[in-house]
Amino acid sequence: MKTTTLIASGALIASIFSAPIASAQTTPSTKQISCELMKVVAQDVISSRQEGLVMTAVGNRLLEQGWEYKQANSIAYQYLQKAYQVPVQLDDESKQHVIQQFSNQAYEECLCNWSAKPQQGI
Image (tube, rainbow, N blue to C red; front, side):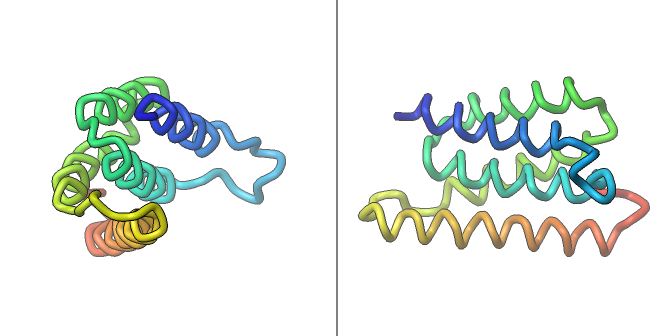
């Protein structure tokens, strides 16, 4: 079950970074990619509770994409810590709602933080 979650999220992360440029009007910004990554990280941590595996996946993705996305690494750690505080002993429907709410909040906070410090990233 835990492996399935990481594989599915890995596919989502891969799709974020490898979206065809022809189908998009512009290439996604570092901000968009990093913040979308936070959303995926939040979902993974709540679902799997495998901090080491999630951070390894994030680290591998950053190495593949280059260090222009390094801001994602530090903010990922912050959201890993927050995600571990979310209760997971919930029924499936409640758990999905909590995961969605938390990951959306992670994405919005990431965008806000990035906008507040545009020269520094996160």
